[in-house]
Image 1 (tube, one colour):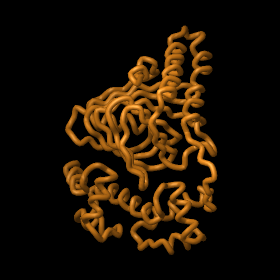
Image 2 (spheres, helix red, strand yellow):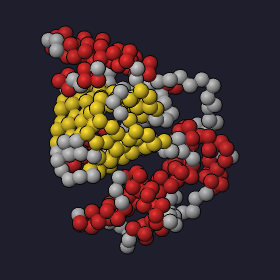
Image 3 (tube, helix red, strand yellow):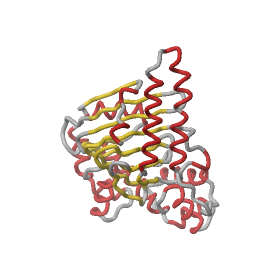
Image 4 (cartoon, one colour):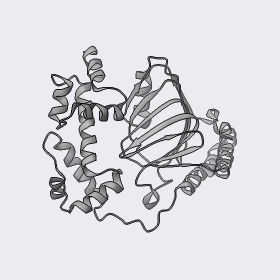
Length: 309
């Protein structure tokens, strides 16, 4: 049944490349600025077919060589694995997916994806999971046969609508495309009785922005609470809800991102100097955390930056 969902012929645009830099540049424009690393030299076997409708977007993607991708999505996005395997890491969550697994990504949340020999169907629809229905964190579950069959029917109808003469195509697609949103909305489990954090998302973002501006300074939970104007429990609940990690885990992750930016520019006398400037006291822990996010050792990133000068 999963093979029946592989219909790139429906797409309004296609892209293929075996060059990592070309893939990175194209996907920056398609999904937003991100980091992409291939574990092996080219060819990487990247293929993307995307359908950009009036209601939303969906795409078919495949990649051969193992890649590590670090970035975020601008709107709620669903990934359905059709073949191969991939892993997702967001905050404290870390899991692997296989054929038939559906992952829903919340907007504006940084995550790391590792994929190899992968075929994926993606749905990106800004209004599909709007408001309270939007997941606060990453979700994963395996789809039952009836859910897959329903999706096959919707994609088949999109395929038929796209094949109609121009005069009828737009109206037909406008009728069919919203059904993808309905299908996706039905997949999101409703969590009842969950406590809503007292710290609003806007205030959490302000704290996050302040953290980014003070990464080179000593940061403690007490200092973050003082900045947010709330107690430790309130701040902990808010970050667990919005980021699926504690406030101090978020600080450590943002420092790793800052270290990645510095190393990619060739800054600092050494990897240890860059890590130390950002408050990492244990080189081994720094290297392990860096590899988890970006898929390579910080020393390798520094070497690449020096070669590129």
